[in-house]
Length: 322
Ligand code: DGY
Image 1: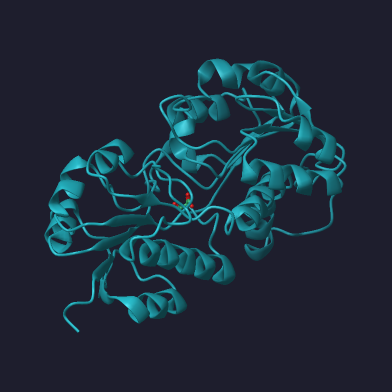
Image 2: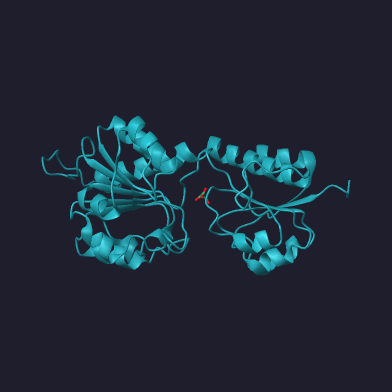
């Protein structure tokens, strides 16, 4: 029994995934809130053969160094900016992620935030509950048309495409910007490639779908926000770091843009005291893009499969550092 490899799982993921791991390994599950701190992670990694980690874990050079026996790092998520990929690669440790399975759930949340922000849903909910609904009024809680408006998608990967597909049902004109044009997606979805500047100038809604890299850090700053329409709404379900959060707060305070729907923040959890959260034209959620029962289960099973492959000396299906 003790010869079975040990898999360290940093948070309690759905049970079917934990059960799958137990079929081929010993499970070492970090049980509690808050997530393990760096020192704790290093200590627990000392005798682990595999690590199943997530956005709450900063897997830097020191942490990887502590995993003397480590043979795979499986991230529970599609983004892997929490992991020092170069440091893992130097030690020949495969790193994997969970693409595809969370695409639709994340696109759903992007659209949820878009609609909720455009139609003041959260304010409307509070208004109704708090007993302010005295009579129907022609000017009450006026939002902005979504149907027939222009959507700008920044980053046309899997999730960006899934958002474009939803936009078709809302008869939206869809612009996108990406590292390179995608003629196949253009033909399939009827979307138009343009520069970031053109996209920002023309869009009623701008939705971000890039990974966080050196290239995309603060991609949307004061200058870019200035290019947007004063009636425009920014949606971010990607990574907080893609936006200069201070510049966004200022832009929202000064009416440079009309609103924002945000699932991700520069620092997570975002402090409730943040000026951003005091603004009425902002709808926020706590990084729940992939948070559905089905999706989170699929992510866990996928991470488990990646771990099993690596431990058996096979190439993991979702390798990110070839
Ligand atoms: C993802 O899958 O990238 C989510 O943001 C969680 O890390």
